[in-house]
Amino acid sequence: MNRFFKILHLYLNAFFLGFCLIVLPAASFILKSAEAGALSDRQYGLSYLPMNVSAVVVCLLFQKAHRKWGSRTLLVAGFLALGGYLACLLAVGRGQVNRNVFVWILSANLCLGIGFGYLLSVLNYETAVIDPVIQDSLLLGLHASLGMGAALSPLGVNFFYARGDWTGTLRALLGVWGPLLALSFLFRPCSPGGDPRKGERCSPEKAGEPLPARAIFFLGTILVYG
Image (cartoon, rainbow, N blue to C red; front, side, top):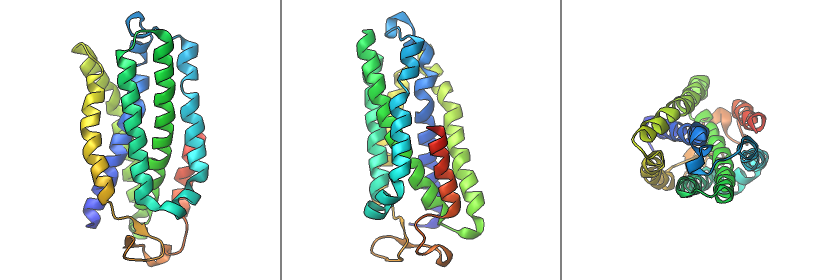
């Protein structure tokens, strides 16, 4: 994969992840309304527990999983988890019974924690090993893309809510999720061992390292976030 298109692919994934990450908080005022399940503040707060726990667990086990399965498999797994997250939120949007809505939100946040942990970990790793000379700039761009997606997410929810159906945001995201999932199967990861059958060679300075130091730092942010 051409380096420019690989960077673009990683940044698009980060933007999509950031957008997904904030959809549920952006819709909190809807979910607390009587017509959408009337979640209490306590239920809403507790609903994030599965996401926090799953994100932390994925972060702690990422290096072992990465050595065993590699970036492409974990990228696909992350997108499948995000697909489960969006599907659960669609079920939330159709629910009106408080208990059912709460259970679907718990399930959605569990999927989000897994998807967030795997995707952000892979994106950090693959971005960090593309070019050690501009590694800092590339990682800054990656997290800027994540932040832009998160910033635009409330606007998307409000746009569809003003038109009578906030779940239109979820259907639009699923329309983007499908192509990104397909591209993840074609992704050529950096191979730490330099095996061209498994992926592109890492830069010589990074060959053999399980994770670059800066990537480990950004992975640590997942733990702090959890």
